[in-house]
Amino acid sequence: MAESNAHDPHERVNGNVDQTVTSTASDAAALAADTDVGARNPPHGQGLLIAAVALLWSLFQIYYASNLPFLFTELTGINMTLNSDMARAIHLAFAMFLAATAFPLFKTGPRDYIPWYDWLLAVVSVCVCLYLVVFQSSIAERAGLPIPSDLVMSAIGLVVLLIATYRSLGLPLCVVAGVFLVYVFFGDRDFIPEVIQWKGASFGKAMWHFWMQTEGVFGVALGVSASMVFLFVLFGALLEKAGAGNYFIEVSFSLMGHFRGGPAKAAVVSSAMTGLISGSSIANTVTTGTFTIPLMKRVGFPAEKAGAVEVASSTNGQLTPPVMGAAAFLMVEYVGISYLDVGKHALLPAVISYIALVYIVHLEAMKLNLQGLPRRGEAKPLVQRLLGVLLGFIIAAALALAIYYGLGWTKSVFGDATMWAMSALFIIAYLILLSIAARYPDLTADDPDAPLTELPDVGPTVRTGLHYLLPIIVLIWCLMIERFSPGLSAFWATVGMIFIVLTQRPLKAMFRAEGWPRASGI
Image (cartoon, rainbow, N blue to C red; front, top):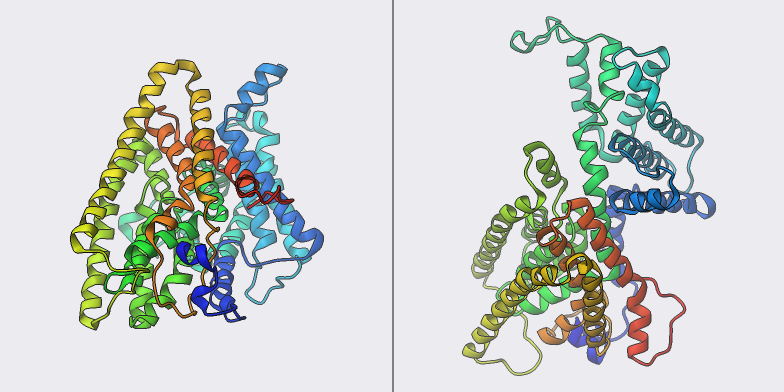
């Protein structure tokens, strides 16, 4: 916690943190790795290859979402733009290559090296996807009339896609896909209910529909992933790695920890704040649950209720704009409304759901007769605390109005130079907030199993990470003021986040007069 860290980073632990500090966190990290990135960690060249491909994928998505293709085309005279069909095929090629190399095919499969059959699947996956890019013109000329190579590539593509789905998401989704494939080919058979029977499709027609045009695998869902979802996930991941996730947990705990069942209420608030930057309920649960579930158990919550509170809070994080789950982006494409409208309509349900969760937690704490944790220093009078809460709401409302009206005013003043002006304002605000944060020690992930006797002050905790809010403001400004597309808005927010990731450590060291560190990463 920030105030504890301001005096002694290990004060809460009553001494040095022993090896038990990492037990809960490592278990959660292993679970997250197994779910999100396959938990395969081969050494040396193979591991570097996986990381390099993931980095190249990220760079490709940033390039595709930006205006750089048009700029390079104008400067070089060579067409360097990508249409949506090519982008979808390349996007899926990256995804299936990483699925084959990072996710073991079987639960007992090797995790310290990539076996030969996974290399084979990876290469085949890339080939069947890039087939659509290399032969795009000829495929368009023979629309609806597949040649044998089209059918072979389509069939192999569906098989390796099902294998990638199985190894990354499990068997149930493959079973669902298999049921629909049976319905496509055998829709006229007697075992199909009469009310949904149809004449069925030939192999050639089905393969062309599934793989060779944009109504099957390369349809709307994949287009949404390639144009929007990836950039928002990358933006949230950069925020988390930069320290914003831990910052939100610390802030919520300092705000809510003194109430009845404080850690449980902090879990709800931290999940809501983490939901701002993460559209994944699994990532939200692992990020916040590692810290909040053990604390809830220590203050008296049963293990089942502690887990239920965390899961409910993290699942609702998918509703919290501006970075929401993939369903929000699918709504944009299928329903035909803007992402800004989706975010506006999601805000109220998200707020209501979290208010309801806080109230439910309060009722459970009352039933269990749980007390909050004491704060450092003397308790403030009730009137002063209420005034503090009111001041917080006023400041939040003022910031919201400043973002909408203040930044909107800059567009009318600066015109075409608005982006340059906003970039300058971003850098100035970043330097000011980072200089404030440099006055306090960096927040570190606390040991949830260590003794906890008091809470830190809210002020020092909040001031250590205010600069993390700037990329979120950039994202909101691009969506609401500039009216950029979701993909382009996520691009500019990601650029701002990359700038923060690369500069926050050396700039903090400079503000603290510690010298320039060798590594300026996260």
